[in-house]
Image (cartoon, rainbow, N blue to C red):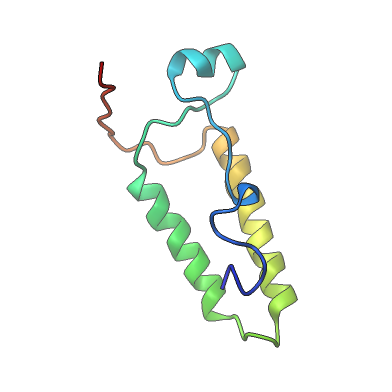
Length: 96
């Protein structure tokens, strides 16, 4: 669906740059930092995207589907920046 709509799921526009550590988060004044895997959040996003996809009719309502996906992206990015994200326990160790 993403590719068909010209919104590749792995494009820069679908991501968000987050600090990689708490110290970098504090330096940037950010609410959150990337702590590794986020399966709870990924499941939530998948469920929202699948809901949009279930209403998509290729070639018929592409524009409306794109707008729904863009609104979802905007909402999710805002929640991430505000620190309103699921915070599951993540174990992450750096080598060296």
